[in-house]
Length: 111
Length: 169
View: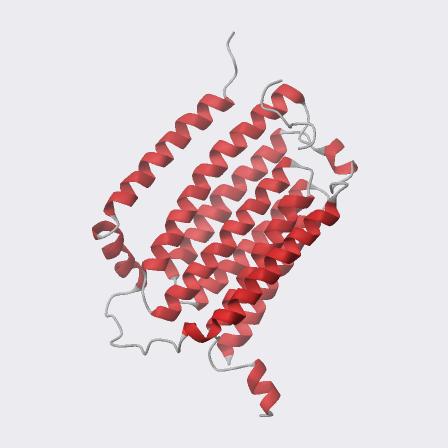
């Protein structure tokens, strides 16, 4: 096999690849969070960022041969579930009161 | 070799899903792209021998949270919102911030790369599987955080029901 190909296709995936991928996913989450005007899509970007962090936890956990990282990741998922339930309830209430989901028009909690 | 090819495949799925999530016009399309991205990350979990998290990702994230998202998208009528401008007027500032955050993360990674060290040699392969190991750790060392998490979920259930129910005044 030519050396360039072995560099592209090593036998096992190095830790840094996972970390770079996770950084890319996190930046995409930040971009979506800052760009979009729709509350629901902003919320999805937050889920994207949480997911990128989970990937980092699992990558280090695999690298260090410990399962503690999986536990942290699990707790992040639990918090994400609670956050989704409460956040979507807030979104429903906002939509009921104002009939819009543009974040520019929902700048204060009070009507 | 095979690992690496699977890594490329799942990473491509995750990144493509993420890009579509933040660029698609309709919220339903965004949600479906996010499901693809989450599935890609789930595949990466499986690649790193995190079977339990793989299952949780599929059941809780894709089967629970994303279905909740889709329900809410159906409840709020977004047809008019899909026709409007999707991005802020000041999106350039956001782009600079996102690129800066990504660049700083990559720079810190390249600075800290020597401290990662070589992977710890697999001492003695644990006779238990991933799920057994996790259960051992979760119900012994992390018992208090586990109970606190259950309390948090209870508060979230009560709070979301209170917030979403109809006002009777």
